[in-house]
Amino acid sequence: MSEITVLGAGAWGTALAVHAAGLGHAVTLWARDPGRIGAQNPRLPGVRLPPGLRVGGDVPAAALTLVAVPTQHVRTVLTALRPQGPVVLCCKGLERDTYLLPLEIAGEALPASPACVLTGPNFAHEIATGLPAAAVIAGADPALRAQAIALLAGPTFRLYGNEDAVGAQLGGAAKNVVAVAAGAVMGAGLGENARAALVTRGLAEIGRLATALGGRAETVAGLSGMGDLVLTCTGPSSRNFTLGFALGRGAAVADALPADGRAVEAVHTAPALLARAGGVDLPIIAAVADLLAGAVSLPGAMARLMTRPLRDE
Image: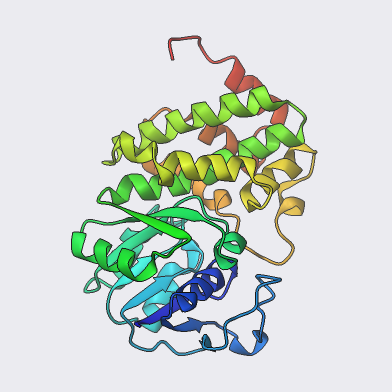
């Protein structure tokens, strides 16, 4: 048994805490407001917290600290709480103003702490209820990858290591943007052919982006890229897909965002990816960024994509 701390009591952080506790670890789930969480967390309805899982507002020393807050809050949380020891970033996206990936944010906030990232095609409620799933632990340090895998893998949660943290993080970030486009296609009734084409071309964009920024194309073909993209573009549990679906039905962005304030990472990630990508050709990501900014209508975005110059695949 090891001590595990999870920072962030949203659906994903709670699911990871429940999973780690089920493996026999001593788990502390850090919450800004521990008092609102009882036997169940309202952010993860239908899942009872194990009796040994401790919910609190402090951060004890731990073998691993899992950071499961939205990417836009990672810097603030790490700077304020200063967790000791290895850190696993369990969030996706880029920081709005700096365009940094989660591991890069952690490197600035906690330069002395070894860090890796957990990413892949995982819905929180399925992890919490023990349905079979797989994910990737990505980072440059093989010993840390092995430690995180040993502590977090279980009979229903298979983990793979990958040294390509850049490719893994970009896959997890960019798939949310493509999921908005996929949701918009389905909300507008444009058909399964259009969604399949969009997802496939979206994967090609993510591959170009990853290789341009120092990642590997094969990483994008794995769980952290294609796997996560397929899940998010087809699963109605995805907040990014749901946002896109509402936009496809004619809703305004402000009206389509979750009323409870839950993060929809694509809103900040789309423009951040474009800013970081430089001259990389990202037509779907650019169309989504303009759609979310109100700079183009959905018919205009679709026309822009469909009338691009014809070329070989």
